[in-house]
Length: 145
Image (cartoon, rainbow, N blue to C red; front, side, top):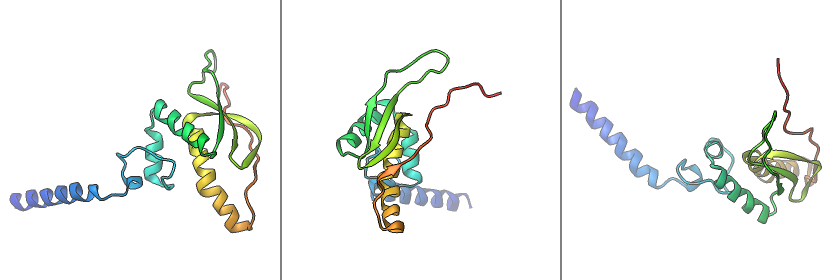
């Protein structure tokens, strides 16, 4: 009985090891995130584990591809410290009613959402292009009692 269980465990480990090599990069959680990764749980996982340097690099690529237009903002200290933030101006051809502050991961995931989901779905459902997004802001720094 012990030998059978060990054999099954070895077979499962072997299949997982071999199967891992044929995973597409966007389904492989160990491959770095790219701007072309489709939306899904693996992309969410990759976004959560981004280092600040990797996020800045991807955000620079997104700016070059005109998926988003951002401006660097200095970190702030005090009562409401902000770090690794940018000012989002627009999402390429999609304008905003006003710019807003966002962390690098929020800006990057927003750019991916607009380019991969919001624009195609708007075109499918309405037959017209998404041209503007109205938003109410992003950061709210206050005491919550």
